[in-house]
Image (cartoon, rainbow, N blue to C red; front, side, top):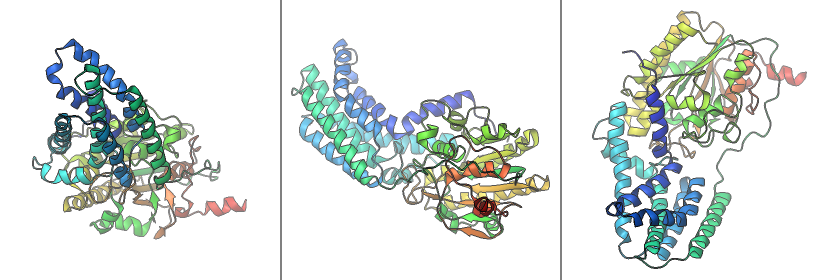
Length: 494
């Protein structure tokens, strides 16, 4: 069966799904949705539609604060302090009903709708997936709506405030003061800022300087082929059955401390990898892209300046960052046991039809298995093994056609999967450091580089290999440790 490209409908649907998938937009949408469902019987009253916007206005500053700030990893426990304070201030008789409705709908959405029905329809998981997915929701550490430890206290606090304001406006409950809401909002803002300022200390420090404008005298590679095994946990890869990747390591260069970027979400990571910089410059801050297009040059732009071509075969939402010109999409609505095979069949077609000088392929089955089934299970190891076999076949196919004679071949991940449970975003254990192997005639053999490096080095290293200008905001360092010709020492001597 031939791999289909993502349709216009799928691209729109992916953007709409991100409203519910990404944690920041989900929180206000879910809170307002639960409130409206709780008051469904009042929808026919004009008074309700007059009171609701006024009550929402009371709580808008609180919604904005929680939209601006995640509470990642161990900071999530600090969410319960404002939630308990809100309960002390605003809880009234009968409010437990709306709170229990919210908890019930949340677990229905995440465990039944998302973890079971959605994954069954999109990638073919069993309809019994809820028996495992509830564990992922409870333990998730990522930035999505499936992070119960972050979403539940946020939702409860906001619903308490909204319901109390509504009862005040309609005269059906205890009177509330605008000043009380204002003081609470200011207190929440100061509290949230201090918690993040003092305790959110594990984000990677960005490289301060831009990449030095030094290139080799001649291109080192005619072509560069990259396979990104999306969501591949480095530690699980180490114990999986991967003879081909093991061979790549033995006959190429492996970077053992290659760090991804923050937040470790797919569109953010790809944007950083192929621009050489971070969210604050390229502008992509989550999988939810509010303004299409990166804010700086990409490696594709750099290659065009020297008459070379680049292409990426990837899921639909990467179009939001790089545009249709550089991204060839495939449909992600495919059974998980065949999707990667079909992706690489489509990759072969693109190589034959377009022969790009830089070609990036994103494999998604490993990531989808981690999200839907977890990382500490045999299914995840099986998917890594499957990816290894498929990449080996793709490599041999390229080799048979002479495409690798003077080409660099890179296998890596964009991010890992957290804590063995299948999330990513906040750089929990298992997410932060990713597999990264370089191979080719210009790459040193049997080298293991243990020094720290960042995925922002991908774009400048491609530029260096192909003697193309660095993207204009590139901060990454060229991965000289892997290059046969020690250009770094020559540059320093000069």
